[in-house]
Image (tube, rainbow, N blue to C red; front, side, top):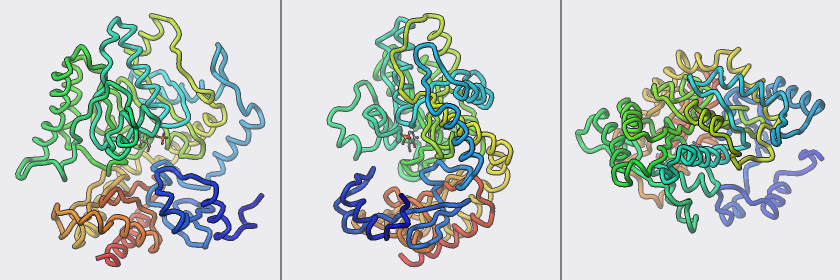
Length: 453
Ligand code: PLP
């Protein structure tokens, strides 16, 4: 059945009648109707009205190699013909998850040699929490089970993911979060630095909030700290350089494990294969998903460090955890083809040495000068624009004005897909962007700001 037999209006009517969308106000959606994205090619997406839109979000932070890659489609087709499904339970497995695990062990920071698969970032974080608590239990310390996280962190939508995350609106709808998760302040200087406080000092203060939380709970009760190297969905909150080394020091001091959530930052986004390498931090677990397959198939991989994996293996006993699609052969075949493209085309190096620095410069020199912009910031190919009353100010618009949503809508009308998190505009494009796409995006965003100002 082809969608081409339907008009946009017919599709929207069926959508309203039958489809509940994620993170959506359905009352509003029913009056506006959803934009139908019907195809995509390279860095562009196309809607059912024929509009070409430069995708400044790589789908949802995931399509790192861009759209329309035959190699991934072929990998999926070949694998489906040969073996569409078999599981890795009960002392069986299939070749592609094995080969992918070996590849990930080669790419990952030293010591993260073992992989546990799921289908989503949320599942990977659920696994990470269960595994870390299981580790301490095997070590004879079952009471060491508190996880420290941060306000405005995003770690997924499952009950565990949302409990780990620090999104107030999500907590409001949890009606009973997973226990033993504590939240501290995020390293977000734009909002939380004191007047005159240096970035360095603010970074240390934000990291010491973790130490305070450990001392308050008691180190013998704290299993781990979890954090995104750069907070993504919270608004591309880039920590000061002093933050992660201090977190590492504090975690080592109190023997608290470090869980790094790289669902967004993994596979090149920050200009290194993993965001923790950008910040020189050593993790006990790394959660990845999204760009592992560039979004062509749903797959997540939890990378597990030697400390945890050796205990798991040496102490033995079953870890009662797994998903039907853990190590799905088709998803793993697609991931292998995707990683091959990222390596072969040198996308990580390109972000580090060319497009990342260029993006930062053009964003600051164009958007950063606009009267409605308080701050621009970026690392690699992820960036944010803070909307404010006056250039360089920190004075927010009245929430009722919905400035962020208006800028987003005008950006889309001008041919650029961006996201708004409140009044923070987000860009996280495919890593195949060249300088011409950076220029195009900044011109289009600039026009959107002019339209709204
Ligand atoms: N962790 C982070 C940092 C994320 O940004 C996300 C999703 O955006 C998740 C976890 C959850 O991933 P998923 O939506 O695949 O469950």
